[in-house]
Length: 178
Image (cartoon, rainbow, N blue to C red; front, top):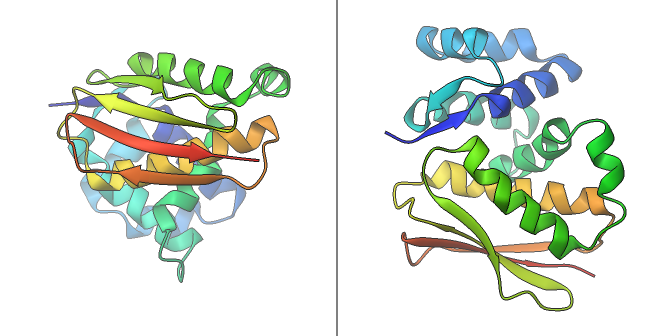
């Protein structure tokens, strides 16, 4: 069973607190997901299968009428997970440099799969997740937004992220910017 670090749950919690929605969020979770949310630390390893409810509930509360709820939650989560001094460094290097570092960090946050950057062009690149065929659809959607959120921190404009989900051995996100 694939696992990820609890920093994602921590980021969602911070977002819900800042928006004054944490109590409503907790009330909407099942007892088991509420316990998972309240006991998880940023360094905890959490089975991927346990997460869909808290992400879905948070996305619905934050973006009730938006068909891209999980993407928008991913966008909000990026700056919560990239805190403090790290944000300063995002203003200096290129988007490709930052995204290569994001791909390298994958192994610290997931115990399955390998992330890499491919097809780097002037204002585009692809993020590829290999060896994680069971990467759930909700998480692929969230990552679409997360990658946008990371790139927004660099100051890039007019971001476009397109998922390519034909090959579960190599999930792809084509990222373009101006």
